[in-house]
Image (tube, rainbow, N blue to C red; front, top):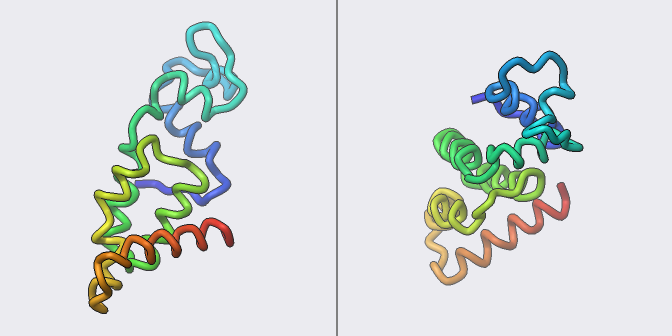
Length: 129
């Protein structure tokens, strides 16, 4: 999977549109859908229904969960929330909660405080990103 750094969102949306739009001859063509020209590539993706689910976010988290340490995974999750919010962040959170908290669980922190610790870390990451 090809990932782009935060702040390079247009590249990601252009890639999505290039995979779906047939016959585009310029970047402006990618922003046109049903006769309407959209202001940005992200809005054009949304109009086409390309952002209606969290498959991309799920794929990113799944791949990162396999190769990143929990702290790095929390950072990745925070960056996703900040730069390209998922449609259903709660579902993504719940699906990867154990991966996000693996180091806390290893140190036998109480389960009640795990969600608070995770939330605090993610908020701090978002504030300082």
